[in-house]
Image (cartoon, rainbow, N blue to C red; front, side, top):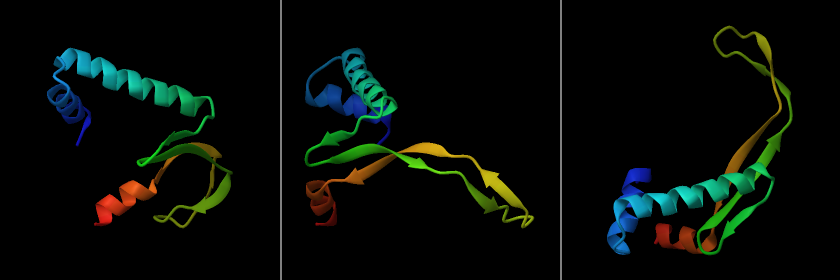
Length: 91
């Protein structure tokens, strides 16, 4: 499911206009993005949690040439699935 399909599904299930459903989805995503940017953790019970993981710089290797390269430190969003969702998906 992509973002457009999510908006269409929300509009159909809650009898909202497409425009209103799009505003709701965009507002939720914007709030989640702001929270992650400020270093907060997002936890949605029964679904999962989002956190930002920090990775330190390291020396890697270019697989094509074998040359050593330095990889900069970075922060990446990480999703951990919740127990209830995991059980529903696995049956």
